[in-house]
Image 1 (cartoon, rainbow, N blue to C red):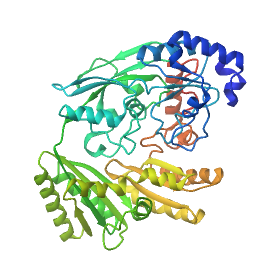
Image 2: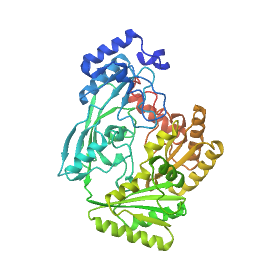
Image 3: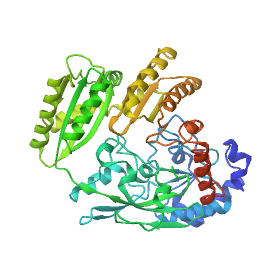
Image 4: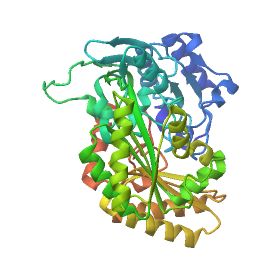
Length: 475
């Protein structure tokens, strides 16, 4: 089988005769317009946002229907041709970067919002729908899809589910796993498994959708989703707070969770991140002096005056108690956007820090301050010329770390060793959002036991015995 050839293992291009055979089979299955050989077009699919080595795929597939996705997998299974699945290419774990002589299967043409149920509050969408486009579409119908990421303008809903994305509002709405009611999945052998459940309560045996949410495309390709919507908030309040310590920030979070049911985001930023954000985005110092820790707070509700009044009242009490050192509450939408600009400067920071090491680890809140201090100290001692930035979604324990620029590959690996070893010491997770991909797989044992990994391998072998789909990811 092709997946066992030296070319597939080494990353060398497919021999002309073999690529012609694969091309002919896929054209027969999908049609010529959906199978691309043009090198320039394929080069745009050579990698994701990670630092994984870009590799031009052997072919680029652009199916337009779920049936074509299944047909493509069936053809590749017959030939033993490995397939790498691609969404919006915004991942940071290298999962969408082609490996070896893979065919890239892009879902960007599966971009239909098929139905918005304005009575039941659900949406049926294809996997290639861009997150921001879905947000706009449901808002126009009086509903709200709460998942929100900095990459909202590029990331796709199928990829969000495949990595169990979380984003800024997990504290209130949960991760993607809580927002998916049903799935349709193309299995590696070409079967199309339709599980488009539309109800929240459905206890009819094993809920198979959870095998595929967060599985990074290793078990099947998500083609369609039924999503749970929420009533559209008509008002919000936003504030930026400064703290003298991490402990003060966690105290305020506890108080707001108790007294403010509309709390939707509590984004923590350490001083090094805020300073870097000011540089790359030309932002001013938010307060008269710098503080060790900052939090961007958002509430979502139905009355702007009420949301702002509640937030101002609670922050006023926190200021009097010394929990908060300084605070500013946005008085307009423009004010709110200016406050969010500090947190959303991540894309500019990543560009400035290239080549970088970026992490999305899960750290128990009780251990997060110790984690930041120990990792910062270790990285500053070993790499004093680089920047090491910390920020995250404190309410769900998702902490982001960025370090760079690192010109040497061995330096990037040393940073990974520092961060992931500290994560293991804190009983955390080496991936909270972006998945394992290819970049983190050698560290998987720090978060999963041998028995867990073996069971995952068994599931992979059961659903993909030929090993054609997203091979070399996770394991």
